Every structure is written in C-alpha cells, then in structure tokens.
Image (tube, rainbow, N blue to C red; front, side, top):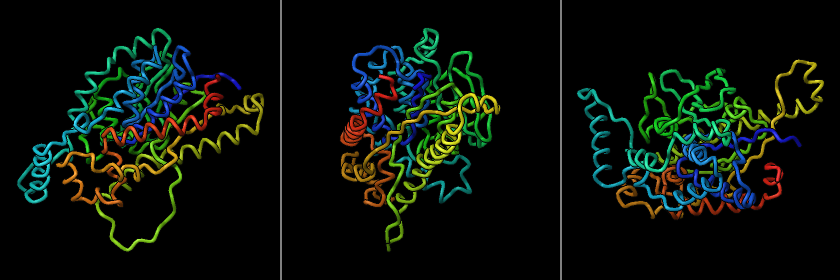
Length: 376
C-alpha cells in the first residue's frame, strides 16, 4: 500500500458530533505515543467543522488536540452552545408569535429559533486561529477546510487554508475558496437552518455547510488526499418503513429534514467513490496514464455509529433545562418520534459521553482496519 496524504473528513450533526471525538480518542490509543499529525488534511462541516478546526489549531500535537476536544465534549452543556434560559426562550417565542400574527406590520422578521452567542464566546476562548497558519508553515498541516452554504448563490463553499500548492476549485454548485479561517466560518458552517442564525461572510449570508453539499468528500481530494477517513454522525443504513397511524409531530418532520441534510449527501458520495474506485482499479496505473485518466483511486475508511443516536437521545431527554424541555415538548421533540431532532440539540454530558463511548468502542472493534489505514 502506498503512503499518500491522509485526510480526515468530519460530517455535521450538532450534538451528534460527540461521536467523532470518541473515534478520535480511540485512534489516539491505537497510535500510542507516536508524535506528529496523522491527518495533514482536515475537512469539516457544521459541528464537524468545529472539530476539524480544533484539530488544525493543535495539529502540531495530535494527542493534545484530541484531549482538548474530549474535555470540551465530555463537559458540554447546552448553555455553552445556545441560550436555553427561560427569558431567552420566552423572547424567542414572542418574536416568532408576533411575526406570524402581525407580520404585515413588522418589517424585522426573526432570524432563528435559538441564540448561539454562547458558542461564539466558547470558540473565542479556546481556539487560536493564528496557530493554523503556523502549523502549515512548519509542515504539521497541509490543508484544512470548513464548508458552508450560501443562501443567495445556492453554492456550497469549502473555505480552506492550505499550503500554496492547493489551488481554488469550482465545480457545479461547489467552490473551494482560499481564506484565513476564523470564528465566522465555523459559526456559518454550523448554522443549522431555522435553528441558528445565518452568518455574513464578505457579501453573502451563509448557513450550515451540510445543505446542498453534493460531494462531502471532494474537498479532501481537491486538497491532495489519497487516503480518506470519514467519521459520520449517524447510521448510514437506517431501518426500513414501519407502520404508523398517527400524524407525525413537527419535531419528527424537522428531524427527518435534518437527517436528509446531514446524512444523505455522504451516503451518495461514498457510493459514487466506490464505483469510481472499482472502475479505476480495473486498469493499471500505466494504462490509466496512457488513456489520459486524471482520476486516481482513493483509499477510504468509514466509521459511523453502530446504534441509533436518536434512541440514545430519547433516554437522556430529561437532562435538558426545564425551559427548553417545555419548548421542545410543544413541537413533539420529547416524544419518541421526535427524538431525532432532540439528538441534534442535546449538548449535555449524559448524551455526549454516551456517544463518545460508542465511538471509542466502535473504533477499537475495527482496530486492525484503522491501524492499516494509518500505516502503523
């Protein structure tokens, strides 16, 4: 097997991204005390973009970066991500109610259901974005990208910071844009539609990078990856249809929509890559060169949850603050059918630690595959 540059692709999913940190903790254990950064290329979307940026900041010491992430996620509370106090939620309810009832007389419409200003404060406190440029200059990092979706253009942008050899790219509805990454990019990438406010970057407002992300793996390839480890935030193969008589609550519909945004693009992209790899591997490297094929086979390893995360969220629903539980109960999120929506918002230790433990165990169960991928 060739060495090649290894990339880490971290998908979105709100609180579900705690699973990724459990996987990374297991990778740290499998690697042992080896120095350096096993993933010189980092790509993230939504909450996965925040995790990827954190690893980029600490890319000179992968073990320290994983420890930092693990400490944050094991001690998360919703009030570190969005305001969940009674006053804030009541104000939100009044704004939305007023807009629905008196929209004809009010020009200023509500921007989001939740106020995520605490997340901005947390990121400002724990991340030194100048460390990304230093890591690139010292060779610890080749490239890092964070995806966001433009509300005006409809394009999915991969904002990236990289070595000079990584060039911008443009494909159908997909753009690679060189920049100096900062907090605005992370907030834009994780701005779940309707839930968190959009963020203006340059001349356009951006929302969650999982929206219209037709090819989640492609930024890693554009930035030079030859081996890609993908960590998902949900099961890629869900159960089939089940009989139901009751009309689905609003939370179930919203959860279904979010799952479509966060999971479907990855599934399709992985299937596409598998077909391309199968075709390319039918020819030798010399035959591909002779035919003028610019494509190359990409080694891929995918680690995703072995159990349904919504079921785990349902078991921990009562750990949310009372005011937030009251709000979510009104849309059906505290019922079993609405637990998918709940799983994206449940930034509480009981839930995040359960997901981290699952990610850790799922990865150790595939120790040989991971070790082979890391060339240990």
